[in-house]
Length: 210
Ligand code: SAH
Image (cartoon, rainbow, N blue to C red; front, side, top):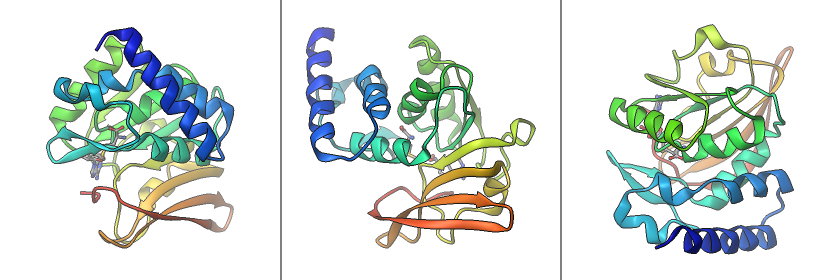
């Protein structure tokens, strides 16, 4: 597929999301900017603009575009906000968020070292200034906290681990799938002075957090 065909397919995908989802224009503009086909294995590139998850190797998947749109929107971030991502995967979601908050403001950690390295190279090649580290979301980036927002693209079974909540400033948001396989919910936490506020955003399916 030529670049122009990818661009047309991407525009159609985003037009469909605009009709179906109640999300902000800047979220949709971000999805319209990021070349999703450049984040998936070559043999799957022709399917990059279907609203589907796709395999990215190491038993992991890139989330469906509507899920990336919904989660990015729930983060409620703006240019200049600093964001912590747990689960870089191929780097697509990080690129979308980076379009919203700007260069140098997304910090992402990935458990599988090979995925972390590939995502770091890919993001750099595509011009995204995102900091990627290999490691566990529970211990990454202590030196960069506090963040304005955080999100997980893998699901912890018993709620968002405290060390991740502790990386987010008071008033900041955390968006995450939580729960066992088959019973996961998307939640948004807002960090308060004494405890967190929790909203439910429906059933979802994510890979488990390691
Ligand atoms: N946002 C990604 C989706 C990746 S799937 C994208 O756009 O492609 C979720 C990722 O979370 C997987 O790559 C998995 O390896 C990673 N992961 C699982 N447990 C983790 C942990 N404890 N710390 C960091 N990353 C983790």
